[in-house]
Length: 470
Ligand code: FAD
Image (spheres, rainbow, N blue to C red):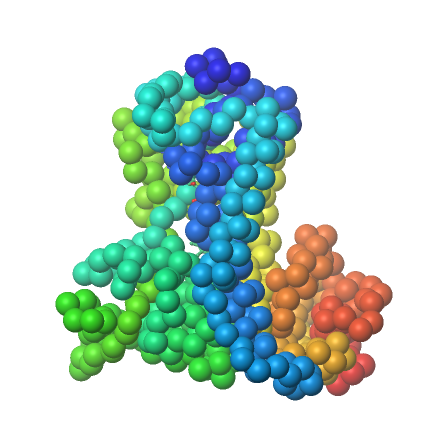
């Protein structure tokens, strides 16, 4: 379809929220156009987020394993080196392959792809300054805003993507910094800190809050922090950055206790600012349309993802909820199903969260703190990977499975896993919670031996009864 023809659905933004919504809409028989300003599809996630970070996490893990783990397995070699340009090239290849793949999916599903910056002219018209220098107007009965999020800046800290970088700069450093300071102990800071730490940087994480990754179960978080400290990551919690001086060769940071007090300095070659992300709606013309946003700029929507302006919807990082790619995708599918007159559904209590360090930390449902706060009587079942045969066989046994279940009914309320590949292991727990399973349901499900997943089964046994192997 030509961009000027009327569409059933127009999606602004081609990230995991937008591109998935566009494909789903086309699959439901709706005439669909997706507008993306970046020049490539996949949004933050594919271009400068999930995918390149996981590529570098894997490459740096391989190096780290070669250096520290191979000798224990009797694999010897000499002359281990890092070829950083080659590492970056493999990451770039993964990204470009996947972003082109989505273009292919657009063609296959007959989604029209307009490359350019979209802004609202009316609730059913979007004008686009196209990347080739022209302009066009795209019309649609339903318009979905999927413009995502951007790096949150810190007052007084200017990101130059050289010495002071955002996650985007941290994914493409030209050399390994001797000293890296990470501001913000959320999952992005810890993942990128892990990448460069494994490659040889001295990493210090400065965090204003008293804890790292605030959404994590407290007990798991403590063990996780110890694990990262074993990997030589340093933490300065309850600390704030009050000044940054880049006039010399490196960066001098002035820090002070979060509660106020004596200042001190911290030196770095590179500083990564990872203090959160903010919804991105610049230049979209929301004010003109009268689309409501909340105090922190997120677009407010109803249960069907519609904004206060009829026919205009919003999904993904630009609306409230966890800023995660899989959540954006779920939003996208449900939003389009509502538009098509079907039922859409997203269970926001069951969006899994994963930190892709080593070990990984994955969770779904409630933390122990959250369960306590509800006042319901509960049981906890735990199983350490030290007692899991597969983890011992591969000599990678740091970690734990923790299951929380309602005392009276044994219904599983939350599952927290720290282990290699926890991000894969978590999904049986997600399904369990989705189906309202009890810990006994998990425990009585046959799990293959020897697998890491057996630790989930044993933790479930420990929740309502006793585990076998500890
Ligand atoms: P985005 O992916 O931000 O996409 C929005 C798109 O809209 C962008 O491409 C933008 O160019 C385009 N756009 C904006 N305005 C306009 C306009 N006016 N006209 C045209 N186009 C426009 N999440 C996970 O689930 N797992 C992870 O492992 C993970 N790792 C991450 C690592 C990093 C370093 C970062 C930064 C993020 C990570 N995330 C991860 C978060 C994830 O990237 C986001 O939650 C996800 O991309 C949100 O999808 P979205 O479609 O809402 O927005």
